[in-house]
Image 1 (cartoon, helix red, strand yellow):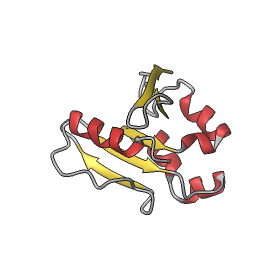
Image 2 (cartoon, helix red, strand yellow):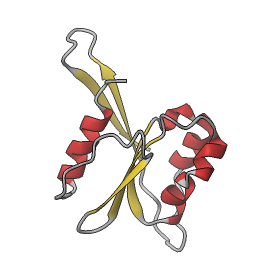
Image 3 (cartoon, rainbow, N blue to C red):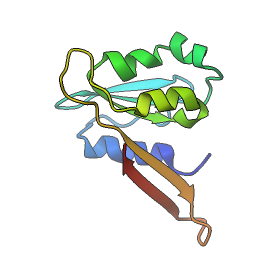
Length: 123
């Protein structure tokens, strides 16, 4: 909590050309959808969900597998099996191209409370 996930997501949304103001963390709504020039972007926050069944009930799977969109997902690591399935390289339905996944890890910088350590890796 407080590591800067939503701040990072807002900056990324701006970088992807979202002209409307970001709505902040979608903790309560679970997902906010934005329309960029080339694609829809869905910012999801799974913090309030407690089981993989709730992920299904909230329609999270459809965002990740059934739609051609960019997803920013906070707290995916709460669901290790689901995270492994999501991050596994695979073709999008109806497409010959592989989905590209990036994992962003934010941590507090132990030497300065106002700084964050960030690690971005392509999966």
